[in-house]
Length: 74
Image (tube, rainbow, N blue to C red; front, side, top):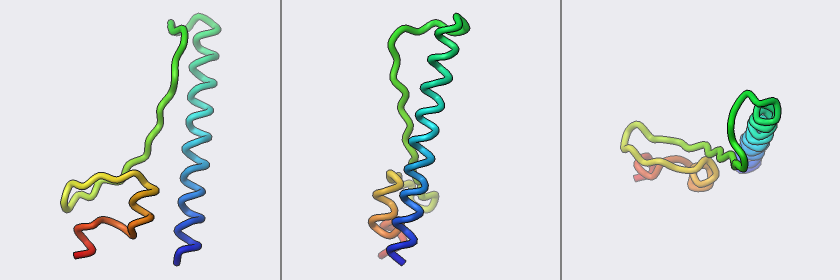
């Protein structure tokens, strides 16, 4: 069901955005209180799906868009 897939993807994207925000805030707080040393920084967060059958790796959105792994669609 396309609607369910879209809702699940949106939920995952919101969680990733929230995780990125919290990580950024925590690093800033630790830096500002002298607990870690860093000046400018950027946080990267990426969720990937790895098919253990064939070893293919996908971004979550790509995986959902194509309906799963290509090796299962043959």
